[in-house]
Length: 115
Length: 111
View 1 (cartoon, chains in turn red, green):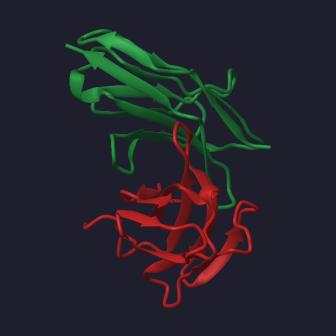
View 2 (spheres, rainbow over the protein chains, first blue to last red; view 1 turned 90 degrees about the vertical axis):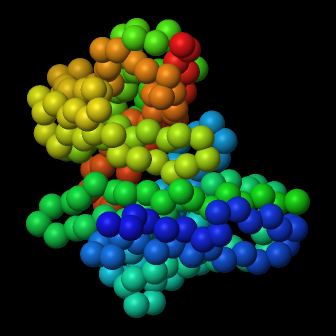
């Protein structure tokens, strides 16, 4: 079990630039989730996939945000035209769903800083 | 709607002290409840879970009992160690795929 892997761990960029993050879930997990965590707060749900289908998106996910999971394995989260308020930790989690919902396992996150 | 409320931190204890971190929830139906722990610079690690009323989750000396009558899932440990210093998050899962988290409680254990 290699765990959930996220890349990069840290990203510093200027306001207005586009950024993309990658998440590799635990290999047998069919569900993949994205959360955002700001300092001193709990994670907030952004979106999730079951296999390659995106099943739910939070209203936190503005038009500048897009997530994909093209082959039902790894996922990418892209933020276009970044803003100061996008500075946060972006967490990915995965779980096995089928005959019951398994617990979500988290990666170490990507910390985004907007200059 | 679904929500989770945790006691505010930081909580500062001496080593070997008894720990309680309060967590209450609001939800329709029968959610599953979780405690996650986050060490500095890392993601969240699942600490324990309970899926139905009166279930007790336990791991690494930590325990929490799912109390439907008081809508609570308080985290306890009989004797904390310095290595338990971290931020603890209570969370619920109530269909729909997403976890709903509390704001987190920072625990600092002094030698």
